[in-house]
Image (tube, rainbow, N blue to C red; front, side, top):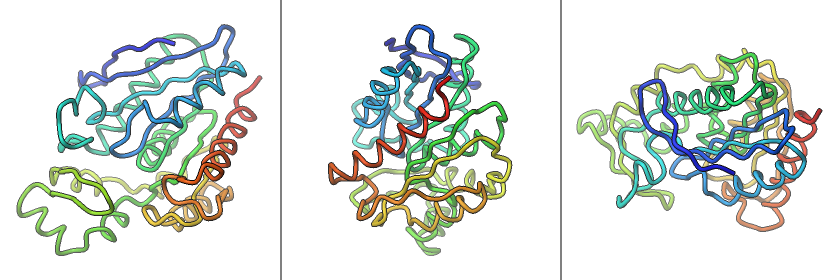
Length: 256
């Protein structure tokens, strides 16, 4: 396992943890959720379990996240983050892994990181597997439901949003919203050609399961529903079920 620093196409520094067993032929790149980081429990455990069966992993902190961007700050995401910048982060992670060898690459993403993962998979026909946990699939609709038109108008007027709902607390520049509106995410999903897993908590009140169901129709798969689970899979048995579903899919798709 190697902790390292790499850069995106714009020269922004990013932190990553690379762990590739000897003779591995595949690497899974893991994208965390909004306000999360590569050090979250799930990614560390997936790293261990996938490495045990000979599959490499690369977990990274996306732009605006982790100690490079949030050290000493009250918020766990920088106000200038955007979907485009996050896509550049994952693109840099893929390029970095490819610079290390001719590996088959799978993507695993959670929530907003899942959105980033399926967008990148829609643009890269060489991605071999895509595992999505509780994905945001229509980010414009997601934020409209959270904020309402009045708060979005205020966001535009003031140039910054101070968000403190759903147990979250952060600030976002209006450029985040403008950037989101340049993407037609479900239309982009039609270009995905690799096998896709979608797992979602049946009682998720943060990202409605409807978002996963609409994506599943497009990519011709079924949503694996973890009954009773919330967005964080807080119950240990639900968490284990979610993790086992993801692990089994990645091992089954990427093992040689």
